[in-house]
Image (cartoon, rainbow, N blue to C red):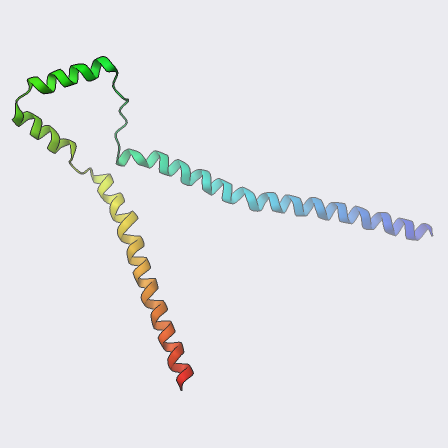
Length: 127
């Protein structure tokens, strides 16, 4: 009877140790995706400066001065200012290539490969 109780206590301790180990493993499994999510969020927030400048919104008085200055400037200067504002920045252009052209190319390749695999599977079944 005493050996059975000792065995039962040993089994209970082993289960407690195992549950702690499983809990720690689950926490480690959650830590990596959370860290990657934080890193991706930071990259998106920090990367937006390639598209948008870091200027603060102007106050009401500054906007009124800007409107008055725009009315006072010749048309030629205003047109060049608009052209300058619409100029494509290098990092923004590179980001468009990376985030549009590369995934689209990958998806087209993936589609073509899957269609080829389907066709080969059909040919093997028909034989």
